[in-house]
Length: 157
Image 1 (cartoon, rainbow, N blue to C red):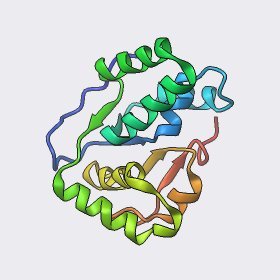
Image 2: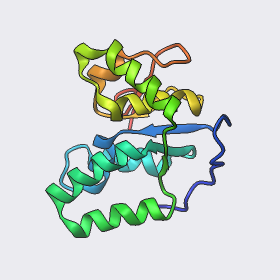
Image 3: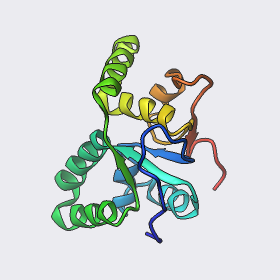
C-alpha cells in the first residue's frame, strides 16, 4: 500500500473517510479473490482516511488467517501497524447504539461488526463504505440520515 494517511484520532472530529468492511479487507489480502483488483484499485486511488472498527479488523483477521494463512495475515497486520487502515475503537455509548441497530435491523442479522461501521459513519461524518454486503447496507440507514454510497458497486472502475 502507499503512504499512510494522516488522520486525527480525536473522537468527535469530522474527518473525511471511507469506511472499510471485512469482506473488502479480505479481498484486498487475497489476490485470487475475484473482487481483489476492484478493491485494490479503490484503495490505491482513495485520498480519504480508510477507517474500520476493531471488530471488523478481528473478523477480517480471522478470515485471512483461516483461509490464506499466517504469511498473508502478517502482511495485513503490517498494513494496520503502518496506518494504512485506521482501526477505531467503540465506546460504551457506541456499543449501545450498535446494539440498537442490531435490534432495529434484526431481520437482516447484521451483527455487531456491521453495526459498528454505521456508528463510525456518524463519527466520521461519512456515508461512503467499501463493502460487498449490499443487502445490509442498502437497507440500513446512516444515523446522520440519507443512504450509504456502496463501493465498488457505485463506481466505475
